[in-house]
Image 1 (cartoon, one colour):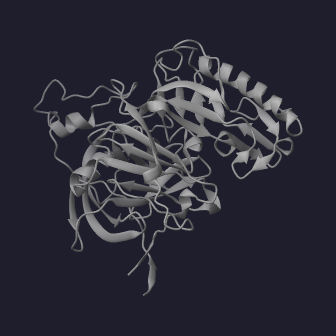
Image 2: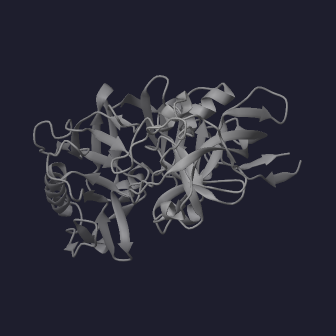
Image 3: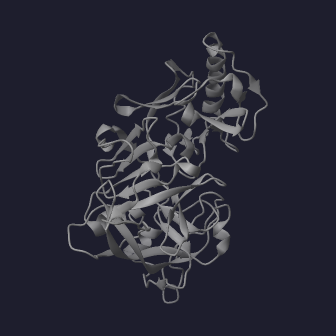
Length: 420
């Protein structure tokens, strides 16, 4: 039996044609980390990529030759869904004063890195993708799709080289998870396993509810061991929030102002490279981390602080930090979640090596936001903190699942090769 490497290609689904007989299965795509921007992308059939944005309500790209304009009226339900989450600073949507002249739906693709947006339209396109059984790609499917099309390449500023747009994975009706669930008749849920990049290989995203097996770990099925906490929604936002009761370093709570974490909540983001904390949360967190790290000299040599590298607030001489299979030996960071679940991050997800002899705390202070400002989240959990976790976004049960992979497993260990 020969082995063949098949491209796993991106999907935007409105209608689906299965190319081989059998029951529809979840759809799998590889996830690649761009080391230059620390953003994650998924591939298209023509070699272009879309940036993964779990807070994005739409899937959009720059306009391509293969796109066919979709004649959605500006008052149609689809147009309303495409504009359900207006972005601050973008023009207001609507049909205009003269509906006879303003019949075509206009939407506003949004760059989550720069904050820029531009007028666009809804378009039809077609992609090819693979389904999965949780172990390998299984079967190829052809997909017709509707996405937003931006007319200016300025929308691509600060995105990875080769990226042509953004794949919105939020809980909104026109984001990718909802479209896959509708077309494939599968669960409205998706798994995300973000890679660390480089030689560690591509991570994986599976849309539609699926088990997950990784190479080199035998018959272990990872979704059966997930911890779950409720997903929280906030009015006017398509993003995923979780309720955090407190933050702890090892077993000690960080002394935060009352209701600091409840003020605008804790949101998950794949477009923030590192976790961002509002000033009223970051400053006591940083002080507590430095104190707890300094106290570790009792067990090894004393960690030595060095001049920090932007955007980080504290860095250490890496030679004075013990390095283990779970990363640098520093106090673990725990988010105490609802349902009595703890999301714990060891040194591999809390410390980043910025130079051969310098390691920095990968939590940064939110800029241009005052302490306690309810207009901004208390915490934005960034991509670095979510790498090599199996993450499940269950939109039907409204819950978030997470599992730290053991040190011998990697998100890059999914087998994208199948027998033919």
